[in-house]
Image (cartoon, rainbow, N blue to C red; front, side, top):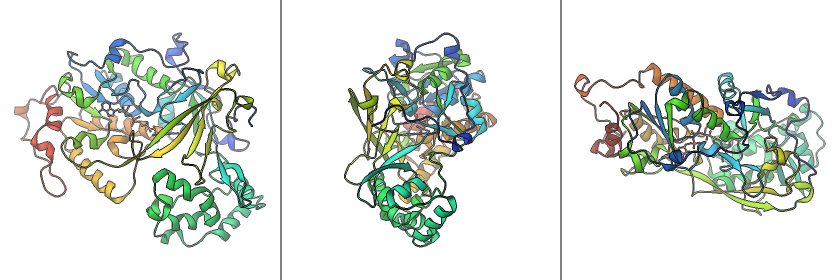
Length: 486
Ligand code: FAD
């Protein structure tokens, strides 16, 4: 059993690849004397969800996740007033973390979040809202080897994983390359489905031990039932690099992810320009929203239209099962922060033990907290929308939504749910920054000219040529009606 936290840094030379080498960035709230280690208590007004009677704003933003927060911060910096609403009882969207009530351990509510980016613009941006500490994320998998025993090995598989699981003795990149050549079956470019693609990438033994059943648990489909494209890029490491990501910057926010949002939305220009309301569902309060020039919607694009009868887009979700380990050996339940369980005998995909992270409150880091807490993750079809299901039907349906959205007057759709695309955090930030630039260039933040001065509005058409339900009234025309000047 582990005798301490799993190391935050990879072994040399791989740790040298991370350009975040020490604490960097600025936490304005901390700089101003805010010493609480968990989320700060928000005012009753913010928590009230009440929007009735609020004065006119330039922009209403639906969603206080990364996409909404970046938009609000950028708008406020440009001098625009914003109202940010979220139906949840916290800011931060899926990045939200908090201190566990009984142990004080910092946990993520919606699954482990590891920040990594190759984009200089994104790294420069995020370091304005938090201090960051370097963290080389490394995943372990409990995997059944050829000897029928369970082994704890690096995931994605490295030389070490192959040696432990398959009894090989690979000692160099060249030997690993040769091994892959020997075991691969078929040509990945000719693969007809996910199984053929996987066999052509990693061969039958790694496929069976690590990828086949994990895919079934995650997508409720075996690779043979999925598009070849889904498994065409299975990672084939030939080196000893056991880091999960290869991005230039890999780090964790020193006082948690929620602090980033507190700094973005509650300090600086946002303090004066941005109003936040939580417990506030757009679809319940839309007729009460204050007048505005632009609505930015970061919720699910299909939710914006389904009230008018279009089919729903498919998502996979995760159920998190919390377990408190009162007195684990050595203070920890498992050897690593994330342990994957790719074998078919258990229904869960992975177990996450946050206590290992270097961004824990001081009492946890100093070993004063005996218990540990884990989240066991079960992939499900029900629940919060997390991962878009990549198949032709969903892609085509999304295209129909997109063509409606492009023509939606007074509304901009931004973010992973509005784009029906899995974005890592850095991609969500980059996307929001670029969307902001684009909206500004197109003058979308400016009040619209009076109706008489504008050409008659064209009724948007669905791909099949029929008029969308929106043109028959309700959602879209209501959203437009809430705009200050029509
Ligand atoms: P969200 O964070 O989902 O924010 C959208 C917000 O809109 C939500 O708060 C929602 O409540 C609100 N909303 C929706 N509908 C309404 C409505 N009707 N009214 C009011 N509010 C509404 N990225 C990484 O880089 N590294 C990781 O390790 C990582 N791990 C992840 C693990 C999981 C399980 C998941 C699901 C995602 C992970 N991500 C990770 C991705 C990361 O969470 C996203 O990039 C990020 O959250 C996107 O931000 P967003 O604002 O677009 O969406």
